[in-house]
Each structure stands twice: as C-alpha cells, then as structure tokens.
Image: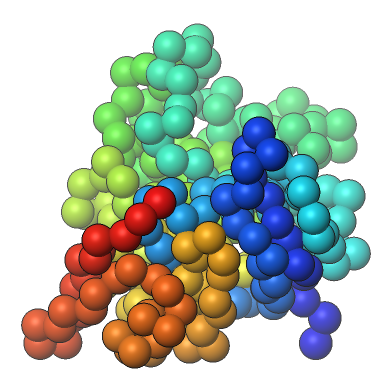
Length: 248
C-alpha cells in the first residue's frame, strides 16, 4: 500500500539548528497516529514540516498524488495559544478561509451554505458573527476544527487540541475524531497519552528523533527504548502519565 505521506531521512529545525534528525515515517490512509513526546522534543516542528511551513535541512517529504498540489488539502487545527485574538475577523470568516483552495470553484451562496452547515454541526452557528477575540478556548477550538474540516480533507492534523478546552468538548472532540477516522487519516499531537491511547491506532514517539509504534498498546519498556521521557502510571483501566526529567 502506498503511503499518503512518506517522510524520508528528514532533518529539520530553526536557524540551522536541528530539532529533529534523520526522521523517517510512512503515514497511511485511515491511520489514526498519535504523536507524543516532551516539550521541545520536536512534535510541532514535525507538523510544520508536513504542512510545508519549514524547509528540510536534509531529506524529503513526499505526498501521494491525490493530496499533492492541494487536490485534497490537509486540514490543520493549530494550538489555540498561537492564534492572534486581536486580528479583526469573525467566526464565519475564519471557517470560510478553510475553503481558500476551492473558492474559485464555489459560488458565494455555496460557500455560505457550507460554512453554515459545519457551524450548525458543531453547535456554534449562533456565534458566527462574533469576533474571534471574544471567544472562549473551547469555542475557539470548535471554530478552527470547522475551518480544518470544511474542505473535506484527506488528512487532518491536530496540534494539542485538548489545550484550553473544557472536559465536555474534549470528550465530544475525541468521539468526533473516531467517526472522522472512517473517511480520513488523522495525526494527533498530544501530551495527554492517557486519553489518546483509547482512540489512536499507532503512536510516534518524538524526542529529537522519531520512533514509530505499530499499535496503541505501548509499554514503559517501549518508551524507555524510544528515548521518550514519559512514565506510564496505571489506575484501573485508564492509563495516566507523567514526564520524567529530561534534557532539552
């Protein structure tokens, strides 16, 4: 099976300083990949590389033909803390921006209908005219999830979506992702391993390099071998984690 995204011998970083070195990874159709690792280990850097926001120092990233050249764009839900709340834009305009690659082929009425439909689906139609600066963290996540999904992407990337959200929306989000995974590949960056192992199918441990784990069942021995400074502590059926001391 040809992977949707093929990362080969990738070294990438900032100001000529590598953050990730010699990373290789194949991401397949309908995979649900959980990306874990310590702060500063390179999780977000990996996402930026896939999105084309960082140019590789070495190696390359290849995309399958049906997502190459924006034929089927990649949906992206960024971290809320990286959103400029002072930017003068409404909820509806943010969501509509997810159709930028398709606006030429859609009429204004079709664009409006698609925006209204997805806002209704996520329960935030009533705030469609609000400026983003007036939104709560949970509302903001819903808005950017709508933006990521409105183009019906083949791949959905979420960068720590459980940050700054309430418990209710967190549960709704993961259940929605479970359903969406039937029709798209999902790459989920998270620090909450105790939650994501219930949903993901495979795991990538990222800490300067990358180790791919072919299932969501991961042991402390696996993490130690992957140089991923996470300690698993289990209570009942729900796994919890804490980060061990590590050096950046």
